[in-house]
Image (cartoon, rainbow, N blue to C red):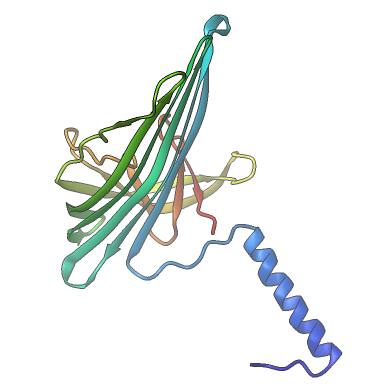
Amino acid sequence: MTVVRDFKQLNRALLALAVLIGSGHRGVAEPRPANTLEMRSEDAETVHIAKNEGAINRRHASKVIIELLAGGEVKGTDAGSSFEHNLYRNFSTDEETVWADTWTGAWAKKGRSLTLDLKLADRKCTRKKRETGLPDETRPCSAVSERIRLVCVTQQVRLESATDQVRDARTQAAWRCDPPDDANLGGTPPPWVFGKTTCLNQVGGHRFPLAYTTCGP
């Protein structure tokens, strides 16, 4: 433990602490371990029904982490939640899904392409619905493919400002990973897009074109 013995040293220590705290408030992401890919996905929208008949509110937030391990082994996690609120003249409904999936398998890189052969190792999921005047209902979660091959290609994505959502001139090298058309990832919707050197936040999962920012803490 370092003991501060004079006011000049105290001032320097306080200044360093202020800079550290300030950088956290600006949303600086923690450095990722080597050979770890991370993405986040978020979406929110409100739809107003004509003639003031009601409104629909949806939101989604999730995180995917892929670890490219030695020997060609891969481990991945996909965790998040989605929520939908439907408001009508005489009643309303709420439906929420929370999931945490774990994947294992193998990875291979060749030139500008990356292949992830994933096998579902564990799935935890709850889906609940509430409706005015009715008891809460637990529903089955959507099925997830037991095995999925994600084919990832190199792509340059244009970044947006995290504050005003205006696209700037910066681009980020990324892996864009797509499953087959008949596969179901269950949680975070495809494509999964990972920055090669940083975490990417994918905004607008139900809309195209998708927007990207760098992840915060």
